[in-house]
Image 1 (tube, rainbow, N blue to C red):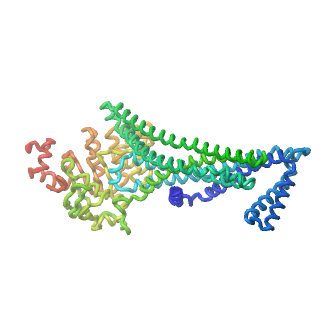
Image 2 (spheres, rainbow, N blue to C red):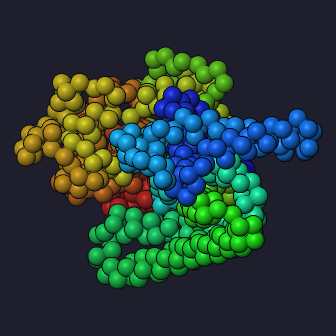
Image 3 (tube, rainbow, N blue to C red):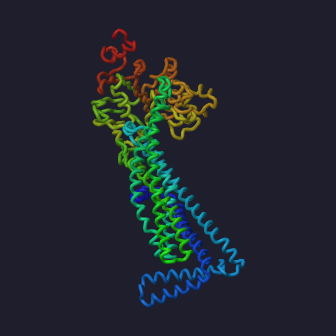
Amino acid sequence: MNTLLETARFSRPYLSRYWFRFVIGIVLGILFGASNGLFMGSIYVIATRLGDPAHIEKVTEQGREAEAKKEEGENPALHGLKAKATAFKEEFYVLIDPWLPLKDRALDWKQCLGGFLLIPLAVILRGFLGYGSSYLLAWSGQRITNDVKIDAFRKVSSLSLDFFQKTTTGELLARIENDGTALNTFLKLGLSDLVKEPSTIFFLLGAMFLVNWKFTLISLAFAPLCIIPTRHVAKKIRELTRKDFTTNVGQSSITMESFQNVRVTKAFGLEEVHAQAFFKTGQLSAHFNIKSVQSQEMLNPIVQTLNAMGISAVLVYAFWTHCSLANLMFFIGALMAFYTPFKKLNGIGVYVTRLSVALERLMALFRLQPSVREAEHPVAMGDFTRAIEFRHVSFSYGEGPVLDDISFTLLRGRRLGLAGESGSGKSSLLNLFFRFYDPTAGQIEIDGVPIESLRIADLRAHLALVSQDILLFNATVAQNIAYGKIGATREEVIIAAREAHAHEFIEELPQGYDTPLGERGIRLSGGQRQRVAIARAFVRNAPILVLDEATASLDSQSEAEVQKAIDHLAEHRTVVCVAHRLSTLRAMDHILVLQKGRIVEQGNFDQLLAARGIFTAMAARQSIFPQAA
């Protein structure tokens, strides 16, 4: 019940968008349950008329007796209820009597037609009501699930980089897809049964009480015993579902890592290693699923046994009270009809159990907050006109300091180079530029305004990134370039490609700018991919250009081509350039040399070489300044 309440609270904002179809689906589900009671009532009516020709007179007499006993004051509550029931049956029988056959009475066309159509009409009505309810609830559930997945995707996208460093891609996919699927399964299948099956039980009970309340109480005496095994199975399935989720995350991670790094996988002959790891996690997942099915299916024989006990109790009571054959047939049929709803309700218990685990993870995801947050009243950023200032900035990922007391000023239109060995803090400093992280101490300002107070989207709109990690999307060339500026026109895309010296090779592709690049742009060479990335920076037309080892992974010929495009891109822009190849920093106005997160040297290229310090030693190792070796 708690899970259902949590599901209702969680789904309420989404449900309000599709409430009309959802409510109609609920109403049709309730009417479906009523049609089951009508179907069993139809069978009872036919059986009664076949076995008791004087049924109308008998019902009428029973009604009179009940009314008399009520007036005499004998058990007024019980006899009042009985009088109402018999009065209802009397009116119903009088209404339908001309249209139904009766034993020992001559048949006419009305009786033939009514006898032929009574049960088929009940079945047709039941079928259409069930179809309408299932369709409308599934329609609503599918859209609610899609909305939840979209919000989960947006939530994950809004989180800061530290979240992605602590979470695997496989887990993120599982949270969005698997948990969304669990919600969809419940809304599409479980919710429909949750409406229809209790309604069926309720109306079947009503029909049974109308026929014989004592039979009803005896036949249902064993039903409460189903609660104990159902709760036990639900608890076990919840635990197995959690374990299965963890296993599926591991399997997804193996798949993604193997395929994304397929060159390394093949180069080192790791195909079978990854296949064995995939197999082991798959076996473990299969084990958990089999155990879950085993626990679920154990409920069926238990429910069937208890149902059989109820039928046996009815048979014994029928012999003891010498009840009519019609009553006995009706109650045995009703108890057998009870089995299907109870079985489906047990299945719903499994859906609900899996849903509860999925909801825990989804709600935990939606409760997460980015570590880098928008200011409560953010300031709109105008044109960049003066300078970027780092004032005593320190930063840590949670352990030791990565940046320690960094201070410098970068004037508009100037070019700043960052040099240092791996792990010196260069990439961390760039992350602070984009506000992927916030400093643990100190202040970063643009034109005298702290970047924490600026609108994040405005800040990043002033920055264009060209990175060593060239990321192209599985889209066309034109779309990949246009991602630099949302709403970029085709003309702007082509101009950007020309500026990046990419237009010529793009035109030679099979479909030109409409050529799909494949995942990660695998259909292009490294230099071509980098020039598409530079075109993306061109179309952005941001005043601040950030270069993160943009040519580090290229061969000498490709580097020359790309460097030419970068030099053109850097014209009339403020540049921050991280470079492992120090020759790239010759054009920088000022260079900061970092070591263990601190600025240990600074100056222009020639000044640093002349200083005979750390920069000179790095240059010597790259044969730029052999005298210092």
